Length: 334
Ligand SMILES: [Zn+2]
Image (cartoon, rainbow, N blue to C red; front, side, top):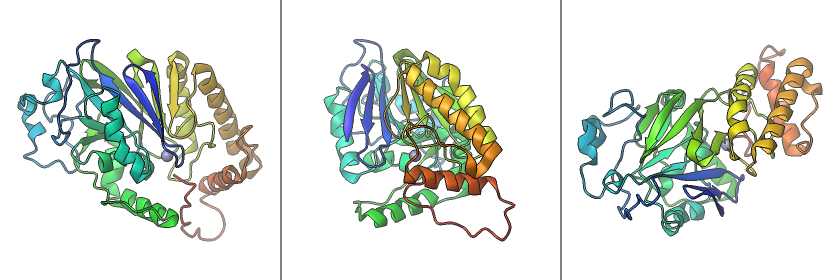
């Protein structure tokens, strides 16, 4: 696992497996942080800006008596981040390996960040949902589209995590429980201390998702888009037109960002992310026009990428002759 400070309020953690990126973000003003040392077990609401209490945020399985259902009373405890000069931190997406998840808390502490009060996931694929293995008490905030996906296929992420772990002989101390999933309106904003995160809708790789913009830090967390190590993948229920629309929507955000963090692989500056964006658009247009004959983006033409390409072609031709047998997902697909 590699860790890198992108900004005084933003840490990047990259998993040794799948190169999954995780961003830890702190919302506070300079000097406003007074050393929150809570144990991280309290469930603090991930709430959209301007909405108090549970209105508009109730998730799929939030218990009716959860503390955050009582509006402001949930943050009256003296050891909550809200009582500590507005310092709060969120973990966006997650590393994959058990050791990496175990080390996350210490890393956050060493960086001088408050213990995470909430988790965010860019989309509902299993490899981005593991934050609760590290912080079992923290609420998980996701786009409404992702909350709907998780509700519609309960246990899917857990099953895929299990089969991935079995394939790679990974043992985990406890199973993944997603806990109280809170649906966030997207597009929208989400408070973090005295900062605000912008949530922008994404889709096309999967039917659900959001990109998270840390405007003051110049960091765009894109989810599974704009990766320089992976071609656009539609095979997990994605859609080509939606993917193109997502890239066009991300274009101005990318141009204004200092760092763009894809779901997998190296981070980019604005120019680098813009170049990947154009390559991805060119690939998707070629895929729409020429199917299997489409040329893969330069530098992403290895065996694994060609396999993803074949899966894209199959995903685009549901009317192919003969019944399509459900194809087991490979470890390369996520
Ligand atoms: Zn992913």
